[in-house]
Length: 205
Image 1 (spheres, one colour):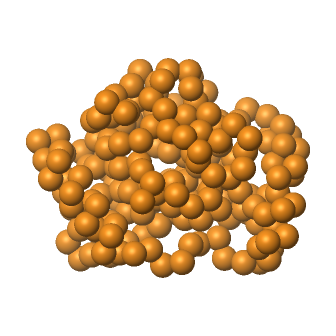
Image 2 (spheres, rainbow, N blue to C red):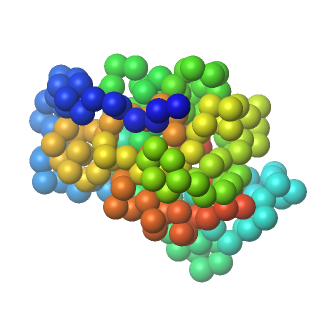
């Protein structure tokens, strides 16, 4: 199953249709990072999710929260160190079925096969593997809202359409087919920090 926009030219021409208004409202050189997140709220949500899934999560030292409330130009994937209360954030794409008009915003979650949507809920990070996108990490959905993750091949992987350059040029990222696609340059750090047996939460805060 392919988890990327296969034709770069298709993405670039399509994104250009909506990028003008975004870039007009936001100077080209503006930071792609959001305002500092409410750390207290993020850590409270992580702690609540860990309590809810205590029997399913092996490691509670790091929790990932993908907050899909902001546009894709923001760093929406927050990796929380639960012991020293620190946070590192990254760009992450949402599924094209969640944003069919390619506005840069996630409009809906879905767990349906073939929906190409991002699924809401808690995931357990699983094993690494090497596939079409190079080194990637499998995910197991822990809730009714994302329990098709394995059959849909929803994973964490790197993608060319996720980068600061893409944001600068088009005001938004490309879209996955539901996977948590991060910048290729940041993938090793994301995989090393998160790793198998941990909690990854997809939500809107």
